[in-house]
Length: 391
Ligand code: SAH
Image (tube, rainbow, N blue to C red; front, side):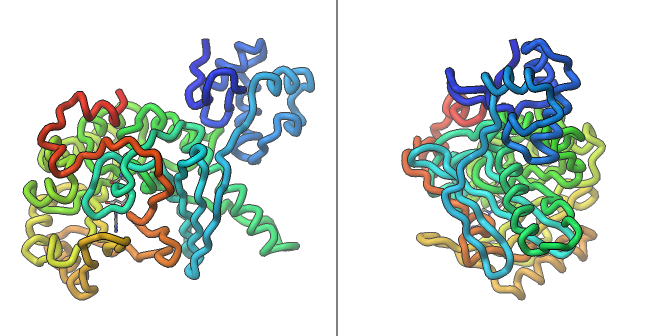
């Protein structure tokens, strides 16, 4: 039987969105048709953005009728759209009656980056992240993860068509996808791996592996799993140059400390023939931003294929942290550069619509509180973690 991953609950029609090509081929042959129909279907769904099986006109009418009886293309529902003064756009999408998740499009001169979510809320409880304040509600399905890219493509293409009426068709608006929205993608590998495969598949979204980036807070064992399955760019939220501080800021560090995490990163690069890992480092005033800390970080990474991306902290209501002043951020960058490490400062985008890094809070109301809280972590064994980390 076909694996109906991401199809929703029983009795519903199968959601074709979110099936990898082998799964789509298996489904089509279960229906008694040739596997090449799967490629045609994928072309309609991903390349042409067509949600209606009825309108997939080069498929035989009888096949369309059979397919429409048991399957559909079901995309997340848009609850709200916010447009920032700097061109950044955020969509709030329905997860269910009381829950929402978010995606953000960041246009730049030479690229268009879509930042997508992998979970509703997050369980990892990083001290400086607003999503963490919400707690964890549930994993997104593959269809919901892929549905974000599908929807954003449609929305942006429609906006371009209006803006450039009469001109030649615009280029594809989304050139890069980053899993840096709500959630910890490596805690939802079951949905995230097929989603990454569809993003890369030349019959799917056909993105190059360098243009798809997964960002993790540092689930070291899952980095090994990822290395076996799919080849995308890896970003790691490091945020501190030593275990004592990282234990505070990124509590998963208490289970997978820096040395174990870095080993997993270098293994990933070896396995995937990757160029470098990007280490994200949020700049928190008087917490992790001193020149000595920069040098310590530099020594940790020197000689390895590593880049550092410094992220000015984005405040949110109730936080005890402040953003480092610009001159401290530049000094930190210069210290790293002096040690031969490429370090860049991320330009903050979409702040006016709460779309900047760490500001995605969705509306996680009915949350299950499985956060790695300050007190809780000491007591957390593997069994508790398995609530959020799928095999
Ligand atoms: N869970 C994943 C992906 C989501 S966060 C991870 O931890 O990597 C994407 C990036 O934004 C991470 O590097 C995260 O640490 C950073 N971030 C979170 N909150 C932030 C904030 N308030 N200001 C700036 N960056 C933040």
